[in-house]
Length: 180
Image (cartoon, rainbow, N blue to C red; front, side, top):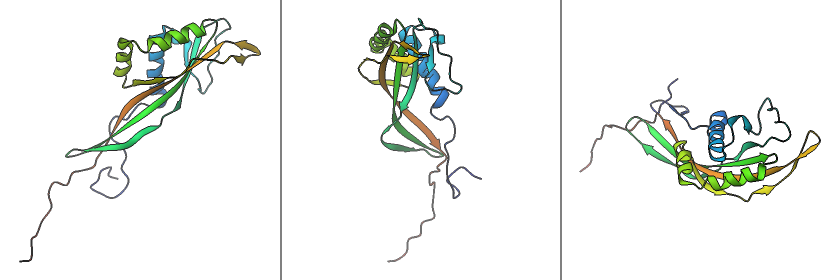
């Protein structure tokens, strides 16, 4: 089965593809740790299988989750001689939930820190850029029959996704002129 445009059938991307799932979560976790100052052992993806063990009461920590990834606009197709690139721009919306006795302070520190140009430059190196930060919200949560302080911050990032397809360029074709 060919995966190029020289024969009929579906085409799938070739080469590197954009980060999703665990690979994207690692980039987001690194960013949250770097900007907030939290140790990596206290920053977790929110929805995992198996579920992570909740840190003990009195610990300040963060759980995050990607909640939506809308694509903005239509893809751009960039044609080369032997392949075609499809460029799309995608928003990545993340809910960051800061828990524990220092949750509000840590959430506010993170919120302000993401606007520091050097921090944003590090985010850009991961292929992401800041679009928007929502209001910091206090949403206490009942965990193990105990109320735990929780502060939510929704952040929207943007990224350019590039996928390559083996779409060949028409190099030549026989042309016949006829008529007067």
